[in-house]
Image (cartoon, rainbow, N blue to C red; front, side):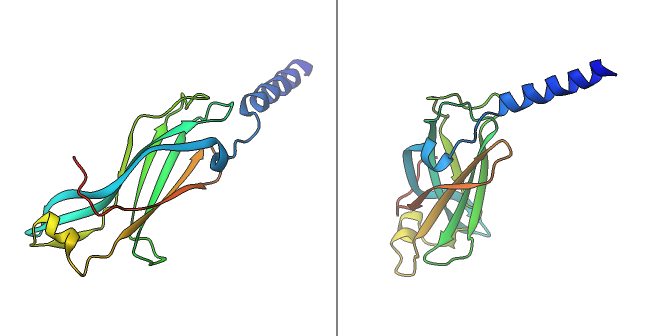
Length: 160
């Protein structure tokens, strides 16, 4: 019965070596090329709809590959504490984001926004318009979510 026990111990050693030490994403993940604004979500219920949007890249500044790197985005309306909308993306799948590598451009949009019969640019200039904020969080593998950035959504129309 020794060979199965040896195989089990060997498998456990390989698994623990593959995991390596945890990476602090708040220090090791760099957000690059951030662009925020309002995306034209088309005509909804006969009205123009604008939703807050953020686009960025993430760079792995750690010395480890970040497997199954995910980014979650929470949009907030003005100073409200409640979530106004959210978006979720996988920035790097099972192959991971290698040390020093930068992801493709990630674009995340809220489902919630403004609707109006006004032209889109006039919507942004309306006196009742309330700006939005966006909070980015990330995780890799089975780690916990870590906040990696907070941004104000600019009052500009985003290109499609």
